Amino acid sequence: MKYTKRYVRIIAARYAALREKEERDRQLRCDVARRNPEFLKAEKLFSETSLDFAVAKAKGGDCKKEETAYLEAKKAYDSVCEKNGYDLTLHVRCKTCNDTGFVGERLCKCATPLYYSLVKEDSGIKRIPDFTFDDNRAGEVDCAQSRQLCVLYDKMKEFCDRFNDTRVKFILLTGQSGVGKTSLAYAITNALVKKGVSVCFLTAFEFCNLMLRYHTTDVAKRSDYMDFILDCDMLIIDDLGTEPMLKSVTREYLYNVVDTRLSNGKKTMITSNLNLEELMLRYGERTVSRMTNKSYSVALELLGDDLRKFRF
Image (cartoon, rainbow, N blue to C red; front, side):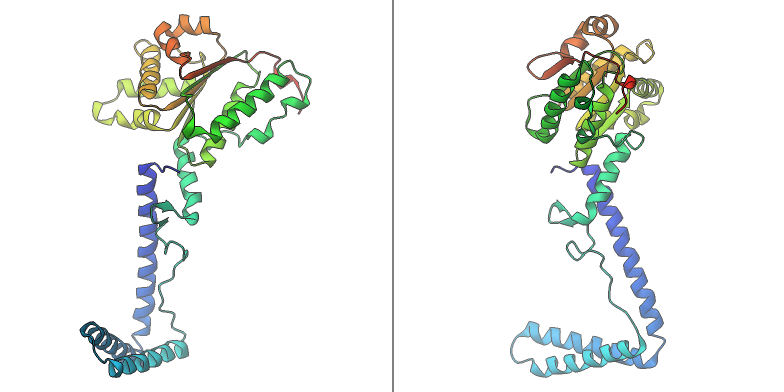
């Protein structure tokens, strides 16, 4: 799995803060123990004999005398701690990574939930249903698109499974309202996030608002609105065609985002109630031609009934 650098930095910082807190807690416990003269004496002897033993070992030769003194001092130190109930060890929550969050360059299992949480937070999908491929029930109802939807779900699941090894860079899914486009987009989003893929899910209205803010903000702050949209592994824009047409914003920025992401090898999915002719009239030929280029795109029209009329 390829981890986004920003998430790696955040995880490393949070685990560093965790270790710092544990060290502070241990230091507080040590401060309490040092109020006891018996402990203070045992700690001093243990520290001195530890140093003597380490120096003797480093020099080579016979160091049995220093080792014996060290072991006796350690035994006395442990005895004082046990008698007084002092727990002065540094607590480690995960022994696999020693609370670093990583095992080598790999993310530790203990950090995986945090990684997925960060992906979800950036993706804007905390607000969308936790709909998965397994939740598809189109095959159980007598709707016109039942078979097409089932095949499409299988194909999109394969796309997610092979996300890093597929020629498909752009998916355009069109069809009338209610035929199942958005639910499929939810399933794709949730499946990719569970794989650790960075996904940005936006309605067309949200995308347009972000581009308007980008267009009208100071140049120094523009990256706040554009970076993740351009850099995320998968961008999904739902219901293209429902957003307002803003001069110098809607068409221009849609083209720039689509073109830039394709040039950088990033994957994008767009759903729309508009057909190809309507999309071309609204957004222009050069934008739609990039969406439908057969060398890297899949353009599908989903035909059928309004699934909201059926009870699942």
